[in-house]
Length: 313
Image (cartoon, rainbow, N blue to C red; front, side):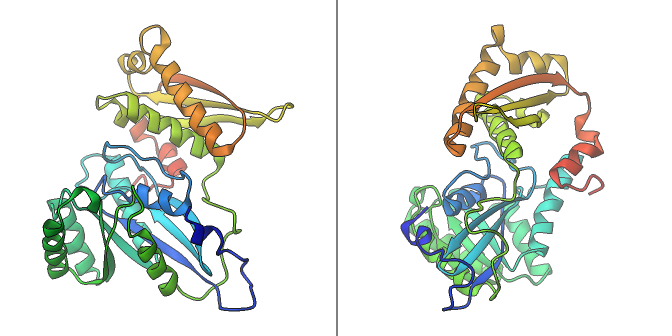
């Protein structure tokens, strides 16, 4: 969290300038960097990040203060052409975030440029008459001449209130973007306590971190056939936390892959997840991972309800 943001939250009253508060929906193609933007602003991980696409499955709120403004980022799943029920539900959640937002931000991976997925999103924004903010991300990886051409092409195809050139990974130019949001969200009391970073329960955040490690260490398509659910989250007498999390796969051969030879893979995943959870919470955590087979979990309405997704999308 930047120094400006860290020292700017003086309570919702203040007796000086009016406070502001509102929702900012981050939309874009998969892997455009929406989760990195959210985590950069909050100053802590609230949304999982992976080089693989479609890692965000549901709408995640990242909450922070900038000046007198509480900004609530809605980190939405990447928008792509859906093939499965889960895909349709994820894309539906992304556009649902737009409906709930005071400001919509289209995040574009500058390396990929104006690809078909982004073109489709711009067309839908135009049809809905939504004037979004354009955030060209990963500019540290692209030549300036390409960035200017990309900006011109996007602004010609769509109608954007403002264009920002940023790197969410390095923080380059992010303060200009945050200041714009802080200035343009509506006057309002803050919706959440000043110190709150997300509305996601800790046990769900821990489950998401486990799922991120599955994406990190399982280099096949398997992570897309995996779901992760918290079973137990309790504080022990010594003040530490006992967390039990179950990884569900669809077939027995997938369970073998997650476990690894002699349980080596699940141990590796568990160690990495536990360290990150402990660093995030600054508390001792005893993490227990279980792997079970649940056939056709992608057709189970209860799973969608747990993620806040529409099973019938």
